[in-house]
Length: 247
Image (cartoon, rainbow, N blue to C red; front, side):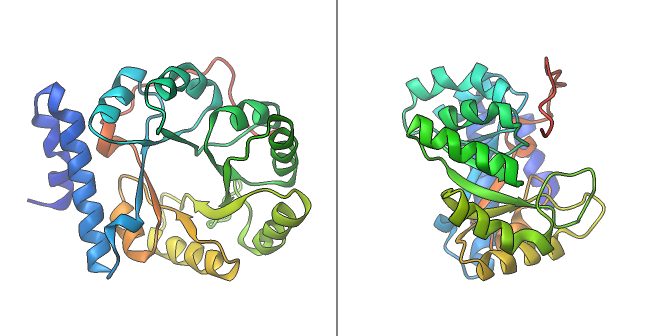
């Protein structure tokens, strides 16, 4: 059976067994990839991407033992996670989608990690709200490794200066880098680039790899992989009341 077919095997299970079986399956793939690269599987954190999936599905993953989740939109996360966080105090929530400056306060209040810091204006807004709220979520800088004009992220050539600005000017708790490679390019090249940039800037955490390529990301050094469909299945359509685009 191919790796892809193996990942899809839990689809044939009874609904109440989907979450634990899918979770175990992904962890097995992570562990195998880590060991093949001479890494301890415990050094890789699985971020379960629950965007567009309801709180009931998140709760099933929580009951199966998953504690780290990723959401793309502040507003959607606000509808799902406050009650879940009250129920599971050790739940860790990551913002992995683009952030508007007018959502900075809400993001700082709700998220434990913000993976999408990508421009000076949002860095300043986050610093202001962290000071105001007395809460300092860990921050990752998103790098546009493919230099795609339609995609968020700092350009590789601008990264080093932006890291310095985030650390020294805005005093943000920058701990790592994140990237989303172009869909039509070999992801390994982008993963290798992100690892090199993280090392150059003394950043220990590297968020890269999604359902289709997380094993490769682990082999190349990812400390966090963002997996959605392999855990939750196909994503239902989502219509936001107001798009959260960059501002």
